[in-house]
Length: 59
Image (cartoon, rainbow, N blue to C red; front, side):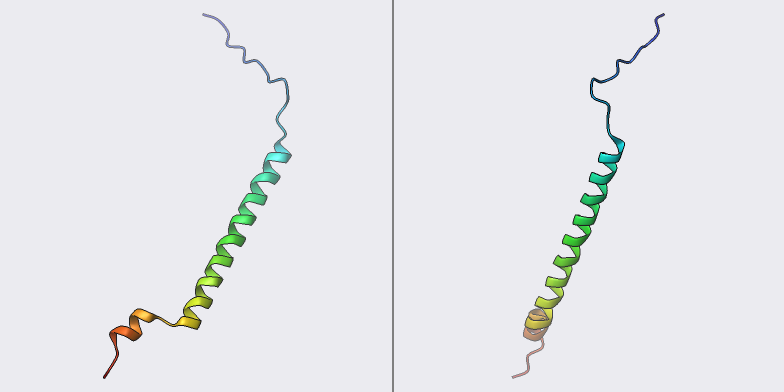
């Protein structure tokens, strides 16, 4: 019937900017997950597993 002629946007997309933004978000997410895991490990090392010690108390 008719040819579909997509209009180009006024500002061309910048693939380098999007790639860089995506990589920075991935790196920040990995860093935040690593820090949360490290903090959790440190908390369990300091406090111990309270459920385990409370269940296995011998009077």
